[in-house]
Figure 1 (cartoon, helix red, strand yellow):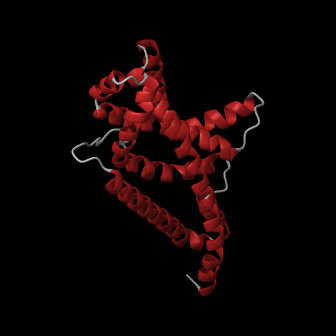
Figure 2: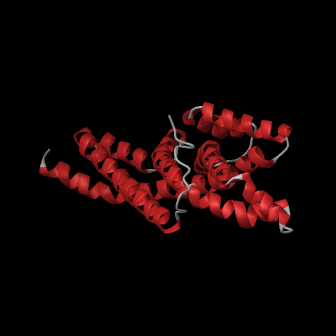
Figure 3: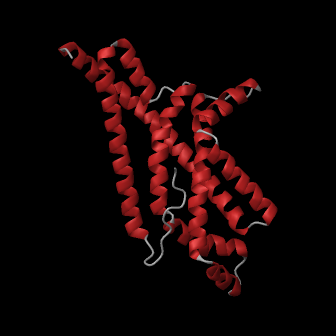
Length: 230
């Protein structure tokens, strides 16, 4: 690489950082959607009547079985075909968030089951309603138990955010391709910079979740392995 190539790489870093900010926005949106939808699906699977539980199981099966890229295309181009105005950003958040919710529901279901049915029975015996027992007894413990496997989901969906470039989101991967298009000699160093960005974010995220786990862990209780991606 020549001196001008290195200068071009340095000049492109602010653009890459701006794109990385878009990835982080997508990450926050899809994690939030997946979190709340995943809890609802998990609660339905554990506590709802069998017909509703079967629907939740079907939901989980569908969104785990369809590739992320296909979901992105279905939601973005499918909705636009029916004249539903949707931006690439929102479509990406919805598609990846729904897929994440299927994995997060496994995590939360395993954590809820790890708490045990006896605590539900004890809560009901002191006059709580089922809703109160879930809210004040079951979920607080289940959420603490779900932190270790949830770290795996965080690492996975962080990388998935780059897939939104396929539907037109101008995030870090797409901006790296723009830089490469202007100067092919910058392809390797540019994508090495992008790789370092994601390695740093993965490390920081897992470090933070590890600290959260140590702060809120329940001695003697674990919910390992649930929701891992294969």
